[in-house]
Length: 252
Length: 167
Image 1: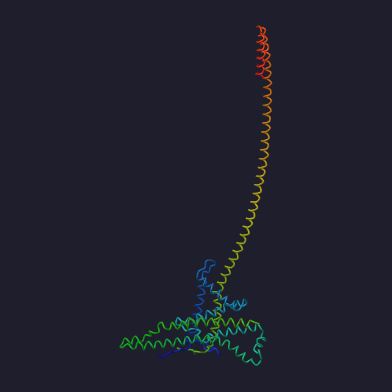
Image 2: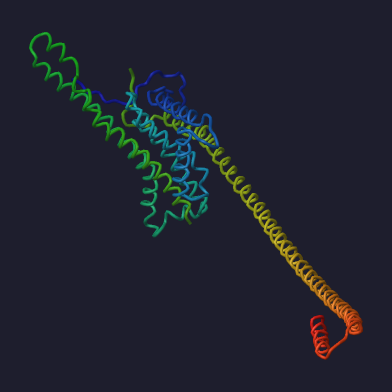
């Protein structure tokens, strides 16, 4: 019995080959990302059909609740001047949650690929830096690295760079650990059921031992933590950090 | 099938995910936030309009109430005036009627007294006439037969009593 834990599958490799970027490979990550985007957009589209001013439906109430919660989350943590960031943070959260949870239907999470989180973290890091420069000016931003004493400069640079890396790796690590543990548990339970049913003598035992009976049900309990809790939690943490870092950067 | 590294950054995927994030941002903004914010704004505007309308209606009602109260007061005053004038008229009239009645009774009494006096006078005159007649009659009787002293006395008594009766 082999347990195979690998990276994203490559469905096909396009002939596009750019230096530095390498070959354009259409991987599982990209395909599932597009499915996730289609899903989110579809839900948004569906939620906002037939909006009314009065006598609203449950669907509309849900849509309004989502929008108001997103507004409250961003405006409450960052203030009114960051209203333009609401769609960005919402997109980040929605994509992260749906990507994390899509593993429940058997697809490989795009978030189980470090490229995805690295992309998000770099975007957020760029925003933080831009906000810092906007608040303090280029000079002020650079001078910020020498505080409280110039000796600290290398450490300040390190801690600055640690921000996106820690954000990306935290999220990625949690999701990947879920993938790994799920694979291990499926493998282990299949092995256990084979040995258990193999005890039945004769042909019946041979046939039954091919069916991983223990794989039904038990992994679902574990997925409550590794998929549901961890998935929603990591999405929330990522957005919370984004909001907090940018809000901090805006402070004089 | 070819697989990518388990832990690693694939440049194309990295770039594509950045694009995906921004596309997703636009899509969420376009398909969720824009319509919902629009509808929330519309509802707010509708609520505002309703409040303004309610305020207007209230002001109008207040004006109508004030006017009604003023009218009521006017009416009450007018009613009081009418009542007062009626009372006055009635008092004056009753006084007049009473006075007239008094005058009338007084006149009637006077008239009656006058009539009584006249009647009395008339009666006295009549008695006087009768006395004359009786005197003549008595004289005739005296002449007619001889009168003794006793008769004479009787005659005088008769006369006197007659006179007393008449008067």
